[in-house]
Image (cartoon, chains in turn brown, orange):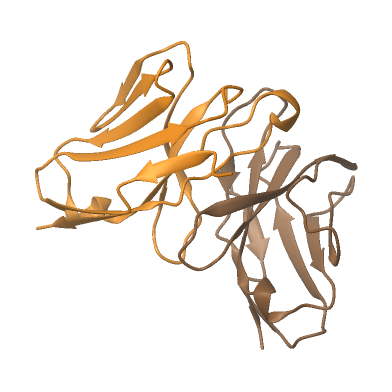
Length: 114
Length: 114
């Protein structure tokens, strides 16, 4: 059973470009969470999605960031007009269903903005 | 407002010793209390977790102790090994409207000397 997959693993963008991060949850998992980890810090919650629905986006910056989890295909975290402060590791986690407590994390995408 | 405080920030232990990491929280709506282990360049991996109706849980060399009235829980690693050297995070899960969200502590860097 493959784990949570994220791609790309490393992404370099110039200031002002767009970054698209993809997350494929574990097989059978319909809940996806995105977290951001700045250097030397813990992970910070960004957004929680189920298929075609955003459940909780309380951790998402109000501008430039968006997330989706379509009926088919991976979840996408999109960052428009990136700035240097967006440089971080972005992790995706998945869980099978509501009420299932365990979240399983992917390897992360390390975004560098130059 | 920092909801989760983890201590110590770093810990050095000799092989065979006991490692103890503590986590204090403020939000009484948390309903699930996991510890994650993270190696450099990897995503966090669920190590062990406890629910608030239990005061202690043991899995192999790892034990969680939970004190609901003090709003604290701790991770004990018995017979610590060099392979346990990693960063450890407590990450209680939010209840109520934030039921999917993990709130991570700042992390504890554990080094086990051979």
